[in-house]
Length: 182
Image (cartoon, rainbow, N blue to C red; front, top):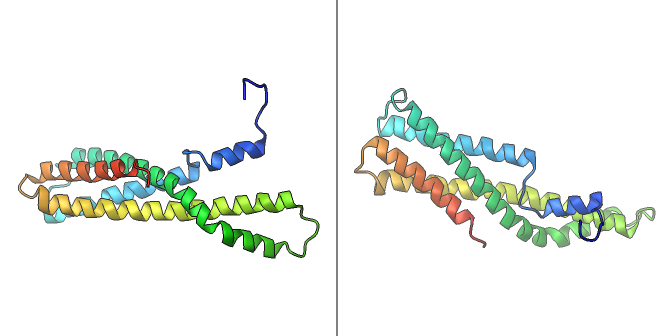
């Protein structure tokens, strides 16, 4: 804190990091790889069902897959942030009981250390749960919107326009919905 001249301790920085909107490098890589795979899956629909030639449409496929990958990873991060706090609240009692049982007979462990372990374990469990649910929720919504857009809303358009509109609408709506607080 520059105004008071105090520096944050390493523990305080780690605690703030757990509750910030930023995700770890590992989570970010997981989100981008998953988003790339999920964004590439609709290519099969357009190649096999809508009969788009992959060679002639390669630039379009790469461009829209890239945009969709970015928007999906953005949505993953937003939903994870919202869900992490809810998950942490729900698992707090179970984690506390587990840690207290584990160290019930150990008199060497101080109350502060037990509290730190509870907080660390609670954040670890909440992070894992929110990451998995975020990926599942956003993927399900994305696939449903791509199918709906492709075969219902934009079916009368040419395959190229259908692809652009369906992928753009699906990934854009998923990203938009993820910005709301639940």
